[in-house]
Image 1 (tube, rainbow, N blue to C red):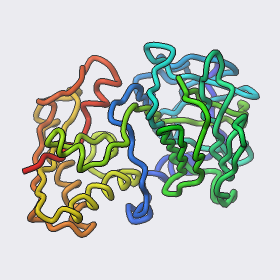
Image 2 (cartoon, rainbow, N blue to C red; image 1 turned 180 degrees about the horizontal axis):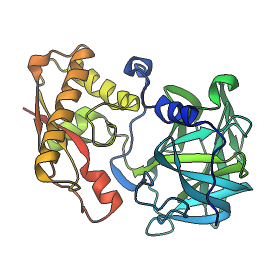
Image 3 (cartoon, rainbow, N blue to C red; image 1 turned 180 degrees about the vertical axis):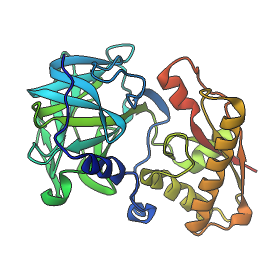
Image 4 (tube, one colour; image 1 turned 90 degrees about the vertical axis):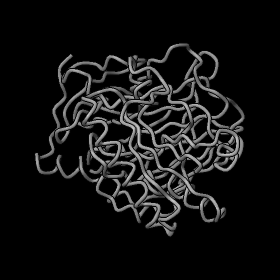
Length: 337
């Protein structure tokens, strides 16, 4: 399988690779997406060899290959109408009745303007949601269309797609905007796949794919039940303490919780996986906890009600032997004081 190489300039690729992460947190001030509680799949393609098909995926139709885009790896879906790839997760039916899916996607100028998230129900991936300038459902009853986005601004940059499925309802987001709500899907998916219309000259690019089960319980109930809130929705750049803008969904909910419960005090705890040495992980977890505390203060929370502490990799909640286990261990916890 030959490697796909982009026709964009190096400068254009670098700008594209940085576009999503450099967005101001304020742009996401009304974002309300929160990921599920238990990550069942996560892949940023950093463990895959350039020019090869990624190890944690299955090819259902078309072609695909991992390539560097602006210095970071991405999954290039290069051929097919429709190309279709599926995360390799133990068990054919791994989704619960409540789950979330997230991914970054890039559409090269001149290509199609979006990506499909396919749902497996029974024996096939027949139903899908299309994330594009107009987000829509395919083979739903009825078929629905959501918010329209400016196509000229849509192509040539990375976007963050997110989907939340709970009690038969679907909510879809592109970047900071909720673009589609399906009040009743009429089915419960068992698994998901990704794809669309692609060619070697106009590939679809994916990165930072994450699927998580559970969620939906409000934060005060979690705090009452467990004495802590374990979150996977506060995200950081790799090996850094800078917050990604899509963290605002979780940060907004925590800030709301604190404002509605004025006597509540919380410790913000930063946790890492076991990659790297202990001293570096400790320092990183402390910096990330401090960054979260600052973000909450910026949202109007009294800083005297918050402490921050880093734990490095000393308190894992899952195995560090798998990508999904490591993803579950990389987290921020809010503990009642």
